[in-house]
View 1 (spheres, rainbow, N blue to C red):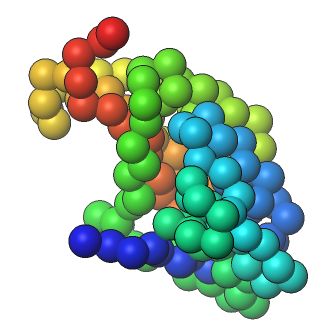
View 2: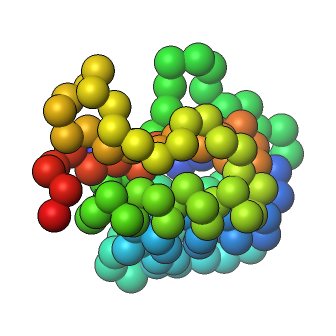
Length: 126
């Protein structure tokens, strides 16, 4: 349904390091970059998430977050740990979320610009 999402960031270098760590743990990588933007995805030139340098970005309010698909529970844990080391704030440690489903495993963070993000997998532990 969605082609890509762009979010505004104040410090492109810091945001890039944060998302390199967080999304790298999930298997995503930089697929393009220039002086004002960094795109993440799987295929060169085809970003799924784009960081855009902005003077005064405003993250969406309560109720909005971006959830990234994780390949495993270990990847969810790595996402959380890596991002905390680069300025992320914990918004829910890795673990099962039975309210969302029997096998819903997720971790929640707030990035350096205040965007709420999640990594999740909804499958039995393998």
